[in-house]
Length: 262
Image (tube, rainbow, N blue to C red):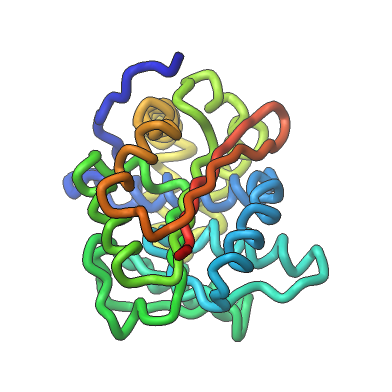
């Protein structure tokens, strides 16, 4: 039986936390996903979603620092297949990180520099594309999460949601082996505010404490299969919905939930 869901705050969600701290958390998470090969097990379900939807272009609704899109693109390429065309979007764009991702994956990753509301994607941006929300749906309280899914059902070729853990704080320990090196290296690898990030990461415990807090809170915010299916029940009858899990080292278990038109 899952723990009750708790909509606690995360530092990287707040407008009042220093930008350098929010960037540190997001950037470190992106590198953790890549260095820990934590999305490798998601490639199969993601490609099954693309095949079922018929989409070759994907709108990443909560792209963050581009980590999920870059990692999936790299894993699919490593397997000898052509990734879809990702278009990165976010309500709080990170164009510097996105330009770097675009340069690293030419023709595969592009981005929309203006803020995009995931609950009301402009038709010119969403038309003909599937949508993905990877490691981000837990940030939204139920009304907003439902609105994101509703908008996807009404105006997209399908929607793919994934989280890297279930509602179990112990699952966050699986981020440690890759996450700690990613956090410590971030001030050197970041594109901006390096001095501030050095202070937050190396000279004080602020970045580590905030990252651990956000990770543990994330596990308490994650939606269960039953909650996701209840969200789409009022408007999702025209879509076929699938749910499953995937594994990553050392003992992590994530989930995916996707819908495609019938």
